[in-house]
Every structure is written in C-alpha cells, then in structure tokens.
Image (cartoon, rainbow, N blue to C red; front, side):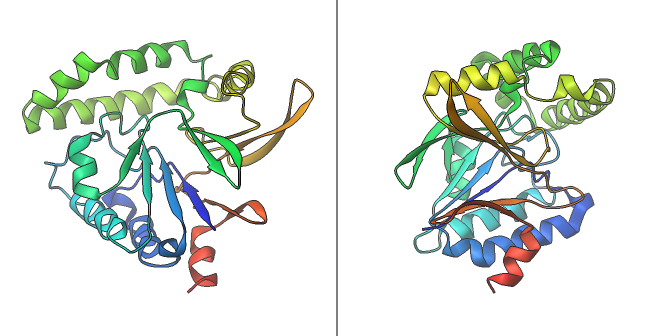
Length: 248
C-alpha cells in the first residue's frame, strides 16, 4: 500500500519541463499508488477558475481527470495560497476530492495530519491577515461572480504584489513558527505532520511533550522536484524523475 504526497508544484507555461514531468508522473507510477495527495499550490499563478482556457490550465485539468478515471486511483487536493478558490467546479472537472486544511488521515493505523503549511507561519502577521480576508466566504463569492477578465487582472496584480512582498521578508518570517507547530500537533493529538508551502524539504524529528514526533516538509518543483512516498517501510523522499524511471 503506497501513498504519495506532493505540493508546491507551481505549474506554469513558463516551466514546460515541470509540466511534462507532472504529466508523465500521473500517467506513470502514480497510477499504482493507493492515493495521491496534492497539498496546495498546484498552480504558479493565482487560480482564476475553470473558465480560464489559457494553457496550461485545460491541460492540467484534463490530466487530473484522466488520473481520477483510472481504476483504483484516489486523488485528493488541498487548497494552497496560490489556489485559495478551488471549488466544486474544479472537483467536477478533475474528479478529485477537495480536502480541508487541515485534514487527518490514517496510514497503517497511525493518524497523520496534513496541511498546506501557510497557517503555521504565524510570525508573518501581514500574510495571516491577508489570508483571512481572501478566504472569507463573502470575498470568495464576490470573486466568482466577477467577469473572467476582471478575475484575470486581480490574479495578475495579486501575483505581482505577493512576489514583491516575499522578497522583503526575512527567512524566519516566512518559515513556520515552532510554537504553532507544537500547539497544532497537540490540538490534533498527532505525532506526524506533513505540510508544504515553505519549500524547505526536510524531515524534522521533534519532541512533543516527551513523545517522539515528526514534521515532514514537502519540497517544491522549482529547481528540483520532490515526492514523499509512504509504504510499509515508512516515509522517504525521492526526486520525481527518479521515481518515474525506477518504476517504469
């Protein structure tokens, strides 16, 4: 029984090699996994909607639909900070199951907590206020009744502002706050937390009130590409291209 986790792919037409890698991954060994979890930021640009017909949006949706249609595949997707507004229209188009942030799952009888990771970065106060605003149900409703052209402009402006804001922040501000991590794991009574967002791929062994615990951070798909694999042997990271070649 194999479960796969990826996040922060940031797919775009400007990075065609990662698009191809993602499509090969879905058509290849990912079909043999019991479940595939994408924990946010599938897209590089702020997600506009399924009516965005500009490449690569239609190709990504089609690839996800084909994967979902495979026998015995389960596709779970979590919203990230680039795709706050994924909705039922997206799930209908792709066949995925949209999961909340956070979500608890069971792996080999052990409870595991899944998150995108941005809500753990509580030292970034400005971002947390922005996130609370942009994910408010009223704002999401207003966004989706806007014409496509206006949503496209808003997405472009948000992307530009976010890129500029991140450059001005320290590495400590944009990373998770350890106190928030510990409190979250205590609140959910878990000893394993998996998240993305920070792009700082690692497996952190931590002490949770005297109990050994792990915080597993998924890497991004910019310079490298990261997949977290869980099977009977436990957790391990692999480059996606290696995973494809080793299981073809």
